[in-house]
Amino acid sequence: MLAHELMHRHAAIMLRTASEHRSIPLDDYELFLSALKQVRAQLVTIKHELEDALRNRDPLTGAGNHIAMLTALRERQALAPRPTCLAMMDLDHFREVNDTYGHTLGDEFLVQYAEFVMSHLRPHDEFFRFGGEKFLYCAADADLEQGRAIAEQLRKGLSDREFFVEGYLPLTVTASFGLTLLDPSVPVEQSIERADQALHDAKAAGRDRIANWQAPN
Image (cartoon, rainbow, N blue to C red; front, side, top):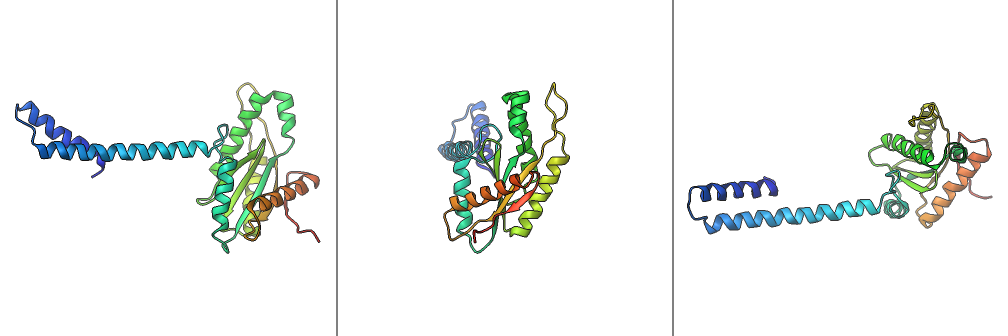
């Protein structure tokens, strides 16, 4: 039986005893206090977990923030040699959305975009807001080929989707992706930079596409 159920059960016993004008046994009172302490301890734990979750979330989109991203990637790195594919994602021509419709609509657009991606996360994958309209998708136990398949599903899904914001016609968007593997031999920041370099290659090649990081010759 859960702690709060025990607390209510012992409280009911004491209330029934009191309603019958009988003295409440000390054992019943101590059992109630013990259950109450357990409930308070659980509430404190939940409070701390919620605070930690809020500190690690981007307040606009609900994606993980920069601190959560670095922490998660370092944990993933420690699991080597299991592969992790990183996909840096950037909305194409998003500045035009802000310039045309304003930042309020742009923010709503980012929220819906993040919700779309997070609804397509695999059970052990993670999604972080890197900054602005850039996001990082962390595909667990995925090599570059598997990561590319995930990115392609997202790329096509985004390009086919219409986003609705009240008062405006449906909007469509495309995204570019830069892929790399999380390298256990270098700092996680360097792997993130590689994904970002690959993203720039995808943009330079025409946008709405995926590029893999290429090691310099």
